[in-house]
Length: 136
Image 1: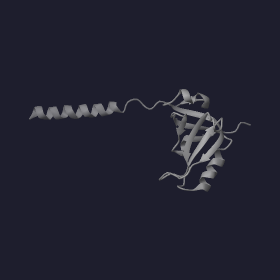
Image 2 (image 1 turned 90 degrees about the horizontal axis):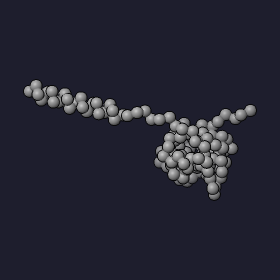
Image 3 (image 1 turned 135 degrees about the horizontal axis):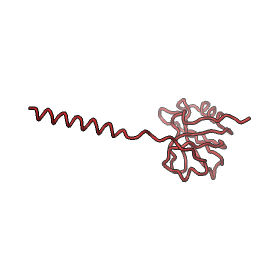
Image 4 (image 1 turned 60 degrees about the vertical axis):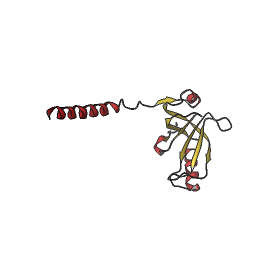
């Protein structure tokens, strides 16, 4: 009976230890990447800063999100340098999406996230996009 209890304790300790190590190292801090260099950092968690030069509001919106909005940094289509996609806060509202476009248009912004092939960042959470303070 003691052998079975010891075996159960060893199995439980092994499972708990493996769970503790499975959490691994903390997520690395994002690196700062220039929009033109983002194509060389696919798959990297990064902060990309640039000037919003163009925006397009998509239709339809996604369930639980507002309209998808694509923002181009530093160069407009047909040859954008870098793009990020975010959503309006209210599902389905064009006025709200237009207000978000107006808030970013012509401004220096920084977007944080994993750089995808394109290159672009899919910024689902509004906190991933920050407007930079204007230099005076």
